[in-house]
Image (cartoon, helix red, strand yellow):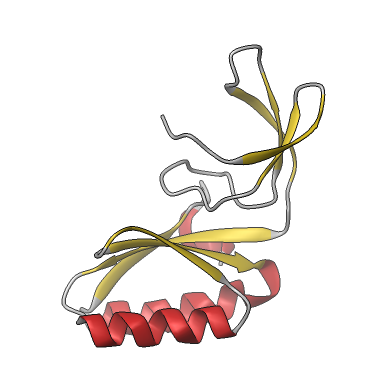
Length: 124
């Protein structure tokens, strides 16, 4: 279970206003429908964004800050769960670029990453 910040659109419809840290196949700006208890029952429409989850393995704090600054300067948002785990919200037009940056750092053994999409990296 993950609590997600959302904007009420009326009735049981909401727009996700945060980066889902753990939920798969939900991304910022997606529109969802909920039941009476507030549980998401269906995805109504995609918001055009993709979530990346990044676990820093050997990267130091200076490198983490530099990476986050590069990513946010391109128009992405970053939320931290801990010093070693962050989520990145990338607009669809930047997803491939962000995936390439993360893949290069992953191949160097500095981090591990995944997308929040059910079909994993094929969406990037």
